[in-house]
Length: 282
Image 1 (cartoon, rainbow, N blue to C red):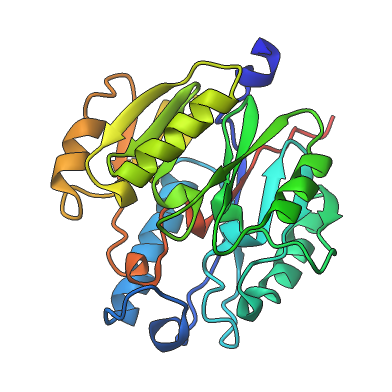
Image 2 (cartoon, helix red, strand yellow; image 1 turned 180 degrees about the vertical axis):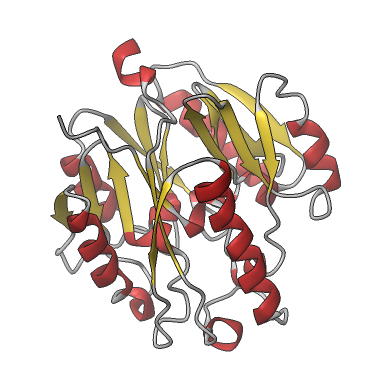
């Protein structure tokens, strides 16, 4: 098992996608806050710049599609682990065509493509938490049991457990990985209940880092050459109390990333990229 963990958080590539103007008015959302499109694009540019310029990942930028208002949230269209990419079947019908461009991009990166074609299955990548040891899949408004079964079939090396998501859009709306064996979790009762279920289902012991705000628990952890442990997390401006908790991670490069506009359409930090660790071609 140590072998499986040794590469956890290692990434070489990130796939991202532009923000269409249609995001502001037509993207799916659970609240009706007004989105400042120019500001959303500025935030996204900064996010992409962190991945590429600051962290040195090779960034594949896909064009925005005006007919797909949610297309910037690429995480939902694919789950990548090792050299296998599962092309999902998003739970919202309006988002299903997002997978076409993602599939082409991942083919270009020479990943083994597995497609979810069962019309009874739904799966959003935002419901998939990979810990380096196993998968937890949230059963939510967007992801069902059949989707979780197909994911388990695609990644046979890993155990897959399902977790009910009773509040929030996705499993990762209130949790993410903060490092090898470390789950960042929101402090609400539904988030803590979900964590309890994950701990009960797992053969592994996970440490937890609890943050006061559920949405602040969505972070991006990486372990990169010459950088070590890196955590992209929401800014203190958004979540001042949660930002103080991240400061406890002493050996980390902590990078606050503003997400004030995309959060209005239920977008979190992990939503906006698909991270890939490509082995060098020998």
